Image 1 (spheres, chains in turn red, blue):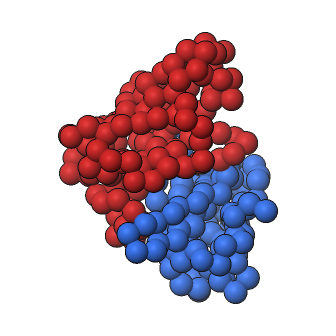
Image 2: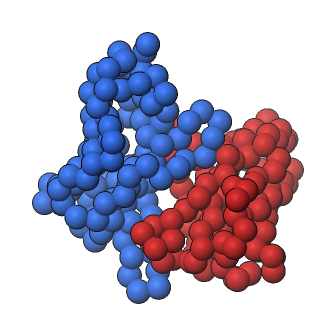
Length: 117
Length: 113
């Protein structure tokens, strides 16, 4: 089975621009979560989607948004980029939503490294 | 106070050493405890999972949980260069149809040949 695929692997953007990141979950997985990873804050939860609906949201500004398509693929958008948005953005898929790691463990992709200059 | 605190590192040990990685937490509602391993330029992968106080062994790895002290540890015996990675602890609370997973910041381990 193919793992979680994230594209692109690397992105360089300028402050003020917007960016869209893509995530294809493992086949059969219906839940997709997004995380931001930085050296200072570690791994922080952005949001979770299941059946095209946002189920949970972390504590990030409205510039961060996402969506999920009917084939479970997901995209994340960041508008009006700031220097502090430079980070590794990780997508994780699981069979079901919010069932806990025992029942439905997360499988992470290798991330998109976003650099904002 | 952060919900999950992890020793910041980095940590460098010689091959064959016993490694001890630690996390503390403040939220007594956490029920499940995990360790993830993240190799350079890769995403985290689940390494160990436990839900009760005590020890859980898997090969060279032992996860230890002390709920009374709100403290978890990961021990690596006979460490190998292939163990060089970032290790993240994670804690989870599951209530009904909702779960919340909180990660530590991670510690980077380097095992020298």
